[in-house]
Image (tube, rainbow, N blue to C red; front, side, top):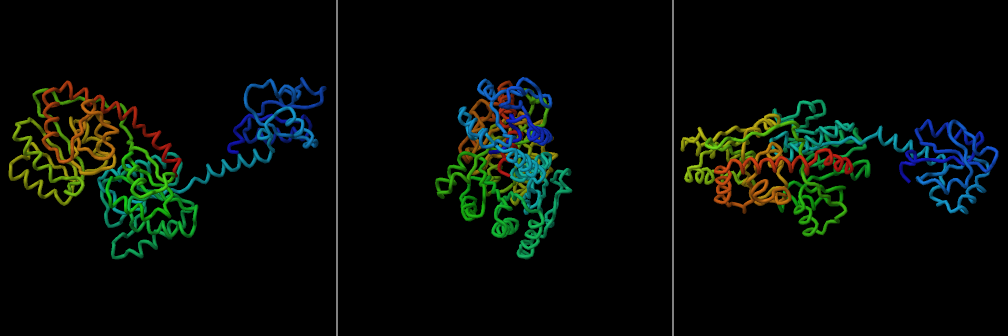
Length: 465
């Protein structure tokens, strides 16, 4: 029985033994309701400011309680209570309460260390942003947090408040074994710990060994961010040594369970959440001025479909839409996009920011009207949720998680993958009706504030840790 020290307790007895029990339990913060005694001469009096009642009064008490027998007549009193109809589970030992208190106190003081895998560095991605926000909140909640990152991939996209919690390792692939050994040594120093992983690399390899050696002292949580076959295959390969698979959308959880026969009790669902900036008031570009479009993602053809930006821009031009397109991110397709913009003399309309920091992203969203996502697959995109939290209207392709967030035409628009024409049509609609733009943006922001609560999300994460 858990948290006995937080329950209402009645002490049966009104002698020295009962006094000692009272002193111990009140020192532990236990709520003592009263004393009971079979001696009718004691009944009606007080002891330590608490009334002494006859046992029959138990039947008149409305609130739930537990009874501690503090008398040398333990067996007789226990039989008396059972004969009165008192549930045997309500009769407990003083020592049970003491151990309940000590157990809770120990667990509170000995919270697990929480290790986060950033072996790819602090790149500008939704998965990294979410993991950093979780780490920040875990630290605020009293956990000892460590961020294992790559010494070869330092950059400024980082929360300065977590610099002291960051430990750098040489994750160069040519030193794979040495990196695993270094991480494993550090994990051993941080036991007991929970390790949150994003990929099968050196941190997971070390966690795997530690799990085999130390069992429950090591807890492994795998975050499944994408609805992608390779991601499913990788997580299926680590079924036996992973405690929790956390999926960010209903579709991802169902696919992982149904396609691979994974035990549903190990696979959890929690839609991504974000830390919202409080007190922000959104204003939209007035009618007649260029509508501001935002694209924030890795500039890659694979998954993100950055190659579709070129026909997207061409269609905006052909339809003579008055627009400003702001592109934040970097990747292998970035030079192609830049060449296209320069060749077509579009730098006054298409603005390439490259990689910007997490701090700068908050500012990036504030003056934008519409968020664009062209991906073939996602989890539940953090960039989309962030944009919506600032009242930016999402117009996105139909990837995992979006239909649980976007109500078509109310707080955003969802189109089939590669449907550039449909996306531009939705932009035209909002461009021509800025009142509708503002209403959609208001609904988007309200959804995030009401349905995407960060503290509720962290309560759930803490239950897994």
